[in-house]
Image (tube, rainbow, N blue to C red):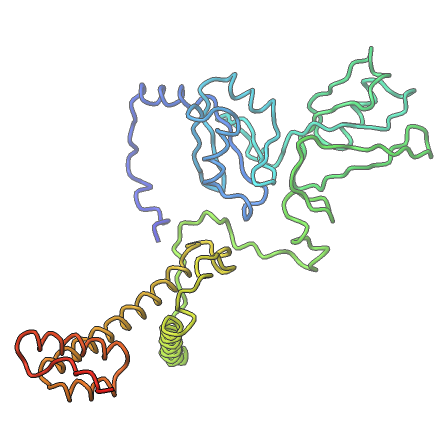
Length: 368
């Protein structure tokens, strides 16, 4: 909607020269790059973590730019060259493209990663700088080599640096003919290489997303750094009828579980025994509260004890009131119908009444 050219023909604004010059000075040393697997490499995470990986945290500033790209601003050319020299770099085990930015930069350079490659298997009789340069130019864009002719015969490999196009698959073995009709196998090892397809050698997808395995290209829904809000699907009328029934079913399950827990506390399992203090297996494997089960059992046992004690107190108080208001005959009737504790309470009440001048007293001894 806002891509229309409203304002295109309006007169331009002129910025102050000093402001523009200062901005150019601050942004002289820039690295621009992009991930080779955008679905696996988050741009915000790259910008936040790469300065720390380089050892320039708080010194190098990163920012995201359009086209799924990013920039890093360095305080000096030396710091920027150090990062480039120690490359190539990877994030989330996948390669990153990093190139020095210039105002006249060809953006096609963002398809190339500079790799140091070890070349093994060159016959000693053909080992010289010209042969190495020709091998390098055949397999990629040659940058430089690391070869010393004085110690070349004692080296297991030579190192060449190439600008590798990420649109081309990597190859670790190739046949070369130093003599016509005679194949010589050379082996290549890419230093600091991460995240390539083991089926086709491409750097732009994983093995699981390869066309050879799946029979078709993987669906790329775009970068995972989009700021668009994901809308939840609106349930249909049929779903709306199912949701209340499911909620009622879950509430019934919760009530049944709560009642089962209450019955367990009032049952024999809730009483405290001589083994109640021992740790149970449930306590040992409970990652949240290792003593929660014991506390529940102790709480149930205490509640049971309180109720038993309350019942005994009610019986005792009722027995005392009956003894004070009755005669000795009533006390005897109580002793015949109650337990031993009730008899002792009634006896104490009878003696107390006799001492105070009542009609109740101890029975006389029987004649012989």
